[in-house]
Length: 239
Image (cartoon, rainbow, N blue to C red; front, side, top):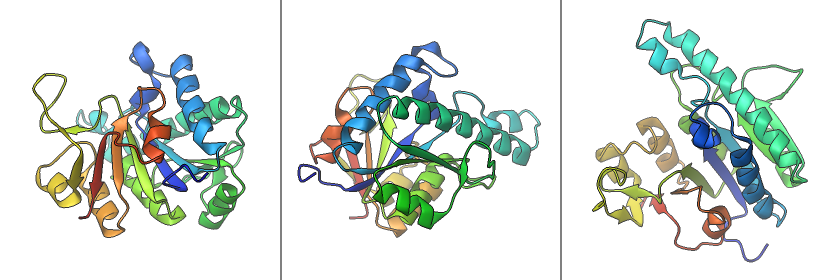
């Protein structure tokens, strides 16, 4: 455990991260790869909480723009995050990890309700806790939910998984000259309207002084390297 810089972390995954090359839904190979990386650090003693989006299944905001009631759409999106949480739970348990899914919307047959003290107890016992249903409220993203849960469990860092190496000055997929920022401040991220997280999430992380590490999930071993303090991705702090 001494090799790890952080002891309690919150890993934020987008729903799209789980779809792999399929473009929709859940890709078993991608689930297995992510679960193996999480298992490597969790079995070494790092306390891991997770928040997963639902964009691989449903995007409420997109349909709201086409006339669907925004609250209804957001609730449907929250249900999609539960599907992803259950899939990740299964993948982690196949890696030998004890896990719990806690949902901000009660569904007792398949998840626990979110109770902070219970979540803390699970983490202390070495269980990975997957927080589903966002904050349980419409109009808030799963990015904001990730920062909220990180604050509640006392996470020392939020790991924001992406499919690029960090935060660039422009889109590296369209501009090969894009420059990677090794570090940034929350104020600059907010000022420059960087889209890696929404403004509410950035503000909450800044207020609670929780650093955000944006990194490439699909380079195997990056979770471990990030938690060991190696220069992986972009570190966003309040300084």
